[in-house]
Amino acid sequence: MEPIILTEGMQAPNFTLAGSDGNQHTLSDYRGRKVVLYFYPRDNTPACTNQAKAFRDAIESFHAQDIVILGISRDTVASHEKFVTKHDLPFILLSDTDETVCHLYDVLKEKNMYGKKAIGIERSTFLIDEEGFITKIYRKVKVAGHIEDVLENCTL
Image (cartoon, rainbow, N blue to C red; front, side):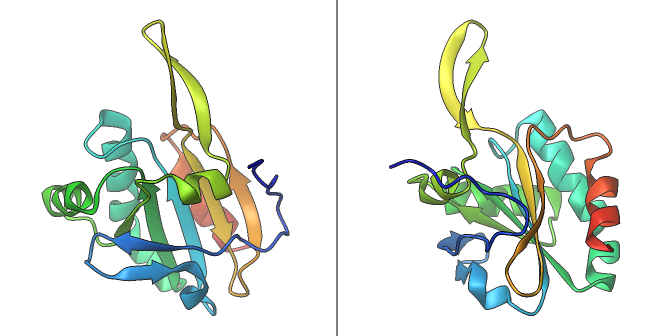
């Protein structure tokens, strides 16, 4: 199945995934609020931990604008629960172990790690407005400065 090429202004693909809070989360349930949907490679890796902690440290700025943060990786719910607890993350991480949502958002890319090729999640963030439309897409995200950029674009 070919992924849909997502562009800014499109309706965000809807999905339902299990969350680190033990509940099922459907994207359309968040209509009426802005959503920062971020995809990251793995729990407890250095860059992914720094990214999650940066979102955590800026949570008040997101809450002040009634913005929901949802993180997605291919890790299990159990892994997410440990990651959330270890780093006191005040937002929900969603488990996409079968890669359905990763395919919907076209974030699985070939990576070259130490000479070995593998398919992994390309760090990506999608800003979704109150009506469920994608307002900003970030691909190949670098963690440094990303949260500030996201916050700035959420206020536009």
